[in-house]
Length: 394
Image 1 (cartoon, one colour):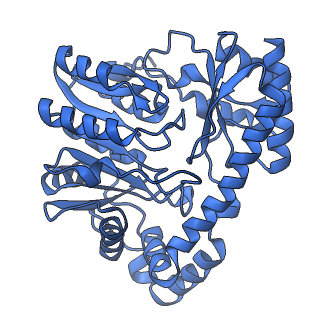
Image 2: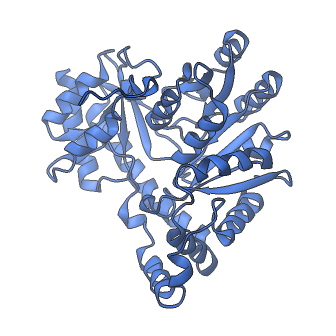
């Protein structure tokens, strides 16, 4: 049969990261390519105890349909924590539980973007979100990244000149893929520009609590006074990614629309895991758990940075991030990162080429993204050594 697929998905290609991950199923491959949290950070014992209790005493509700906005206790606990710990949310805001933070981008795009509309993003940026926006026929305009976040002068120029700008998409804290943080000065300027040009901002913030050094920077949402920011968070990086739980906090009108489009997507997020997450927050010290997760990743970040300095100092430039899961390496020779990934792959080390995160994937990028949360300490050392060999060959 000849299949006539929708025009809007004609240009979509499989995620380069997901394709690379197929290769990493080989246990001999050292994977710096994933964005996976480490299993040692999962509170499996506590979640098992909660799960046993739910199956024993609450299976009828845990295995039933739920409401689209999310399990009420989890919504209330999440909103309470956002307000008290991060000053996020006002009386005009509401919160919806999502099937992972990624769904926040999909539902927001569905609500705001018509085909041909423009969305401004950082470049490079998260491939999952870029493909999401492409799937709605949006025009992507990329703003170059600097060490302290996106170039706000270029952002202002784009807002002045681009037509039908409907959304601004940012990962301001420990950005994926670069690991960079948007400075407080630039955050204030971004909000000023959003207000001036009346453009909603998606603040994608799954890594905010994964800080290992430096001082916390307020979220855009905490500084938002007039409802321009749609804040998307996730439990994937602080509990476990397989539970597929995220959340969005925004003006009640926005949350109302997200709820409607979620009803035609997946009806509601996994209720069983929503109940597990809510009970975990109620029964255990969630902040202490997050602190332990940060302790694990701090050691791994330091191990990768030290190993790269030892084996790759003559070929790769990088900045040790203050948090998150990723380290961005610029290739000193200016050679294509895809070629470096090919050479490292021959040595059994998987990495992601920088071009995978580009708004315009036709232009080569002299950089690669590395993940330090999943590999073991031994793999971080050996993988960096092999990567250094590949970089020198390049």
